[in-house]
Image (cartoon, rainbow, N blue to C red; front, side, top):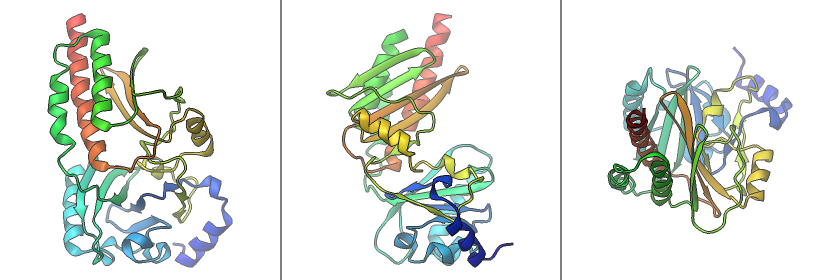
Length: 285
């Protein structure tokens, strides 16, 4: 096994373009299934008080409170074997007073853990999902898509919500927003196209696990396309219904702080909408 010093030398020789990066509004850790740190974003010292180099090949429990680790691993045990995203809110990882919201998922045999400053609004987003879905119960066909896009925009507060499902499309906009670029490589969140990006140490260009990170940094071509469209922040919510792929895409003309609670509430809305969509297709068949 390579030493940390050897990894650091290898990392320094690799061009930054080859490595997946993370938006600097978040912190990221790639962990083994035993929760040993394999990679860390280079801003992790702001969260854990330790250099990203120090963390490598060490158990995460060395750097966080035992109770926080216990709670996160309990969540992880319920996630094992699924493709979902687990979340924890208002977590205190260290002795620092700042709380963080955490999202983690399994990808390629790794635990991808991301943290952002806590939004401090737990429950507010979820409380509106039921009512928004109830308003779709009488909608059919294109009207169902149109109403869903309006409700997604209301839920997220973004300037535009575009719903695509197969070759069908619906859009709800507030004000003028340019044509959004179609980019399958767009991360789930873009908080601010004018924000900076942080490298992940050590760089492994052939390890693609971090491509699943919610807040991986978009590439320069994607940023340029968003800027041309007047979009500064966006949120993606892909889904599938009856074997047909769809996606909600929310765009904002201003920067948006990433909220894992909002993302979870929007995912719940999407799951319930997909059920409505299946029922509508059954009625039409």
